[in-house]
Figure 1 (cartoon, rainbow, N blue to C red):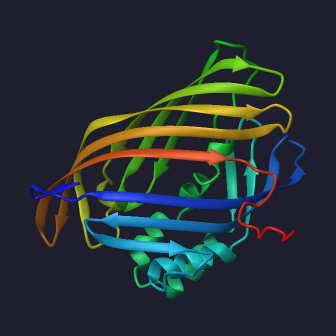
Figure 2: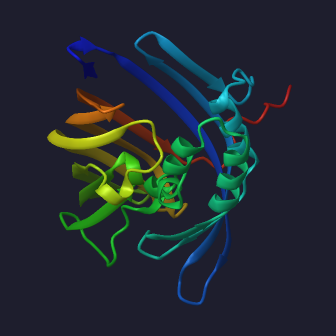
Length: 266
């Protein structure tokens, strides 16, 4: 980021481990899936200010540590449609209530911790699925909107292409375009700042997805997004111009065994 002509570098690494278990197939073809966050590790450096959390070491006692502790205790019921669209995620309201009662930043947490936001945690597992049979070379698209209220709105358009098949896997390549819009007048909220304007400079991505035909689920995926925007942020009646340039890489792997479980001694 560049704030008032000063560069503020940010390096961020996050690793989360989810346990997912199919519960039932509904008459309309939807699947009910139980989800629990069983581990998270975070290492953030913003201009020399570090935030570190490791659920296996309990290395943070701050507000963010409290929030993650509550996440690790939560239990979600997620409804997924046959085409990969996530219809509903139950348990978010209960989690938000618990976090708000113990958080020192309730306005910020309320704007971030939403059902739509939480759906993004499992979207990479299912949101690339086509709505009809496809062959090598066929393309299909999907549009996603993430509304974070006073933080703004993100709209992403994805294009997928089936590139290769084998007896064990399907390989899908993707491209994406991202657009950001600042919050409207009715969405300013209770945050200590207001995003007044936004000018997109970059917003594109590409990725590779490997689907396991034997297991009938995602094996692994890698998505890379380049994002740049110039924001006008008002704090205390003064507007500051902030340039944000971000490169994000997201990797997902599906495993039958919990990688965080203690290994048996031999």
